[in-house]
Image (spheres, helix red, strand yellow):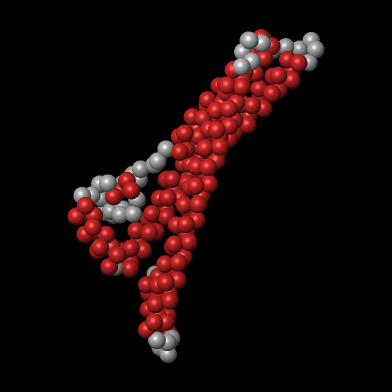
Length: 196
């Protein structure tokens, strides 16, 4: 069975298949790989920003709706809807805050040292980090591995977690306020009431 080609071997094969091209032309496959990785990192960072902005929106909306809900505590017929609204708003705020908390990479083993995430950088003293980073940058295979690991961990450990908690924040917000509004409507109908 034929082994899949790695990115550097594709570059070498490209150079051997196109001997008429100059040495400057051979740099394009590497530049192309770099631009792809750069675009992927930018896309992941924009997703993180998107999730954070949505979490801040949930926090802002709930910070306005909780005081408005509590202003109706004096009305007994609205008490069930107020309780539901406040409890679900607090849960929604909690889930939004959890989605905003920074996530630290967890080491799976000591065979690979992550050099690109802030929590991994903190594990090194300055001289060791600079030395390890210089070694990684001098080897295109090595820096490619670091970027690939960083993208994978950004997707699984940061983005996956953010969107999971953000989903629960939105779900709690929408279902809680829908239930609270339905309690208000039932309370306003003649002959119907909800008592706790």
